[in-house]
Image (cartoon, rainbow, N blue to C red; front, side, top):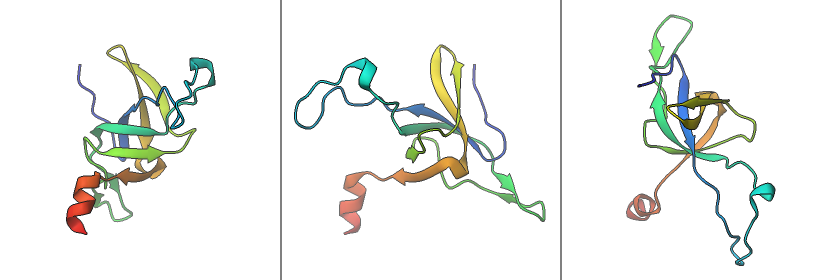
Length: 104
């Protein structure tokens, strides 16, 4: 089954949180917080402005994004837990380090 979000919504898969801290301490499942980082799985066509013109979204399929702790609506699709959220809930896109080094 495929899913296409409507308007300015995006479908996101959470990126799993690390099992250990930088110091090597293992974090138990009960103490873990839900990650606020995810990968965009699908995007809608965009929102319409006041004149009715379609404004495309800034995020694309495959982008790694950061979003707020309570952003989006959790759904289960094809046995996988995903989030649907508006593009305005996305705080930013995480860019690959290699791409940033080439630009410098």
